[in-house]
Structure formats: C-alpha cells, structure tokens
Length: 585
Image 1 (spheres, one colour):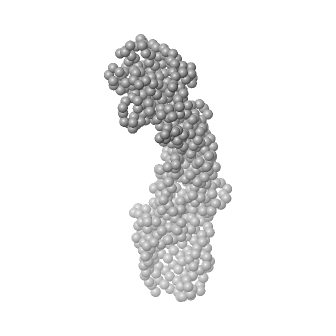
Image 2 (tube, one colour; image 1 turned 30 degrees about the vertical axis):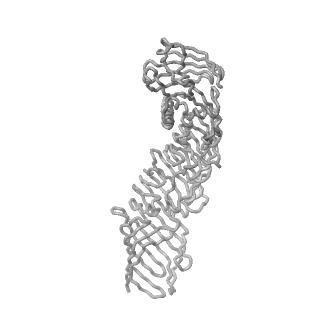
Image 3 (spheres, rainbow, N blue to C red; image 1 turned 90 degrees about the horizontal axis):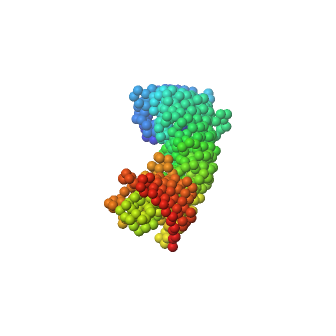
C-alpha cells in the first residue's frame, strides 16, 4: 500500500537542542517555511506498522533564507524512524547532509523500539557552511573559505510523544582561511584557521586564529554554551594590534588578553587589555554611550564585564566633542553590563584642553585627574586646573598693534602683546572639580546672577561675571557694530583655528586676533606666540599676517593687579618701555 501527501509549512517552529555549533539562535527555535511533499509505501500491521518513502521540501526557507533544494528518504520499522536528507542552499554550493534516528510509538502499536535513545547528525563543508548564516539568522555570516562541520546530538525520548531531550553533543569544526562577519563587527574576521570541538554543552578551542583590521586575534580554551559549568581552561582571546570600534565607548587600538567565562549566552569578560592610540568617549545625558548597538535579535548574548583591567597607554584621549579633549594614562577596573559599563579608578591627565564658550583652556600643572566611579558610569569626576588668555577692551578707540603710531604723535607706548586694536590680555585660571558632563552647568541668567562649578580667577583681577563675559567672546563684539551671532561665530572659528595651529607647532600659548590698520581702516589678522616664564613674567612675538614690517618682540612683568612693567621692540628703529598703573572703579 502506498500513499502520497503534501503538507504546507507556512510557519513551522522547530525547537533547537543546545548545539554549541550555533552561535546565536532565537528563543522559539529555527523558523522553517515552505511545502512538504512526500510519498510512502506502508506495510506491516497496526501493532507493528512500517513505512518507506521519500520527502521533498519545496519553496524551502530557513529563517527567511531560501534553500534551493532539499529532499531525502525515510524508513520506519520496529518503532524507529531512520531519516537521511540533503540540502543545497544555492548553485555551486556543496550539499548539507542530515541524518537522524528517532524512536516513535504510534497509537495502537504494541511493538516498542529497542531503546528510547535518539541521534541527529549534520555534516557540511565549504560553501555548505552558509547554513550557519541561516541557522543564526545572520548573527554569524559565513563569507567564504574552506571548512567542515560534523555534529552529532544524542539524547532520550521522554514518554511516548514527540518529546526529545538532548543529553550529549559531539562534533568538530575546522576552518582554513575562512572569513566571517557579524552585525557586531565593523569589518569581517578574515584568515580564520583552527579547530573547534563540541563536547556536550562545552566548546573546546585548541587554537583558533584570525585577522581583524590589520591585527591578529587568537582564541584558546573552553566555554560552556548554555549553562555556566566549571572548566579547566577558561576561554582566552588574545588581541595583537587590533583596531576596535565600540560606538559611544572606545575607538582605537587594543592589545592584551580577554578572559571569557560563564557561558556563551551569558559571557563575562575579564582579563587585561592595553589601549593605545585611541579615544575613550564620555557619555552625555542626552546621548549616552551604547557600547555598540547589539544586532536586532530576540535573544542576543547578555554580555557583562567582570574585573576587566583597562590600561590607558600612549596616545589615548578622553574626549567629549566639542567640549573637552585630554591625553590620559592610568588604569581602570571595569564591571557591569556591556551597554553601560561601570569603571572605577583614577586617570592622570597629562595634556589637553577644554573649549569653554569661545575660549580654549589648556591644562596647567601636573596634578590633573579624572576619577571614574561606578555609580556615574562613563562620566568621570574631573579635578583639573586650566589656563587661558583672553582680550578685554581698554580704550573706546582702536589702536594700532604694530607701529601704526607713525601716523600720529608717537607719544603713546603701545604694547602689542597686551593691546591689540584697543584690547588688553587677561590671563584666566579655572579650577574644575565635578562631573565632566556638568562642566558647563550654571551660565549667567537674565539678571546677571552666575552659578557655575568652575572656580574662575584672573590676572589682573576681574569679577566672576566679567570673566564669564570675556570667555564668552564679548571682547570681539567691540570691534564693530556687527551682528552678535556673527561675532560669536567668528570668535569660535578663530578659537578652533588657533587651537589646531598651536597644537601642530607645539606652543601652549598661541593666539589669533583681529587688528585694524588706521591708515586704511582695513581689518587684518594678527598672530601671537607667547611663553609664560613665570606666573607674572611673560614674553611674546607678535605679527600682523598680511604685513611684512609688523613683527615685534615684547616682555611683560606684572608687579601686582595695579602695576605693570612692559617693553617691546622691532629690533630696528622702534624700541619702547613703560611702567603702567591701573585702577578699576
């Protein structure tokens, strides 16, 4: 007796046993779709039925990935189903082989299988390993290379229904110059060579090496897949000159060893890693760091940090664009979830700057630190001293900064390092103690009341409100009756340009400023390089960039807030000196 039947598999969910060969799967299983057509020859009796036939899977899909052909044969006798099938994902790909032996007891049957054990095996080679892409729903994408997978899952049937419990997994995977990709990786992992062994719920990696972003990655050890079982040799992943990008957390080079414990679905990351030539991003309240968006999967691994020691080495910056940028070194101990790490430790800030309004402050002294506390996440507590120089209007008229007095009486001494178009240099010191994200909290309100965590002082002395007005670009607005928004934008642009040029030249005190030539009333651009020999004694060289006869050398010594001794020369026919007394009232 024979029969033919067709079955519609529009959305069949097949529970997947805990196979370590699957890196990431959906909770409900692997989604299958398509149409099953079968033909069978029935024999035997109701007490001991038997059948033999073929089955074909048309319009097949695994997790919405098309399968070109899939067919096989089966035989049922003495209460046991033996099944074998092959599938090809695309033209030219090697077939995937599937075999299974399952105990099945139909209602009314009296003949029982010899045992209630079952076994399922899968074999794939080379292009056939694209099945990993389908089974993991794109979480692990096979791009090419050579490799093989042999996996056997064994277990027992519970009761008389279709309830099969996996108890053991055995298998082996080998890769030769393979290439993988994942939504969590910015670039593919290439030249992967090595072996994985599957022992029950544990993946054993004798050695697995690959290339990533011009660096190398090497893995060795053991890692449970589902249950956090104790292992003799925890999985260790070694990074050698790897360029890594974790969105909102870090971008740069890493070297060191990461120890992976617990399980593949709930991994804990420990070990010690050296960061160099990179940037650590400070999260702000509106755009917190995400640690790299996880792929849009229903059950991604839940990753946590477990005493991961991060060492900030050469060329590492702590940044919060466009507010601050510090060159840092030190060590951090990281715990907490992957998306919101909780670092602890103190980082020493060796160099850097803070852009406060339209003024760039640079670090001063050697005792500047950023302390990370787990309760604040990636928002460190800063304890820094900063310095800046700004210009303040001292006369209602614009005075030539370089030798323009030749058109006048020549009786007034003009120090180009102090007065540029009628402005005086004010040196400001800022002491910042508090969270980096709150550095700018407390701007002057409409009534002129100032509340800020920054402790601002100046030489010569100015009030808090006056200092905030100066670093906000107010002095530039005195150069003409211009649109205030244009004035602030122009000042900010000059600040950024002088910051870039100053860093490139290696000068800590480099300034650009506008200057007016009284002979032509033309607005020009001046530049000054200054050196603070002491807090009270400084020297500078100033020039107007669009004039060839404007370079001057100046010195200044401040006795106190009222008395200043200064001098300047062009090393030709213009040498000046002055003792100045100032009193504000």
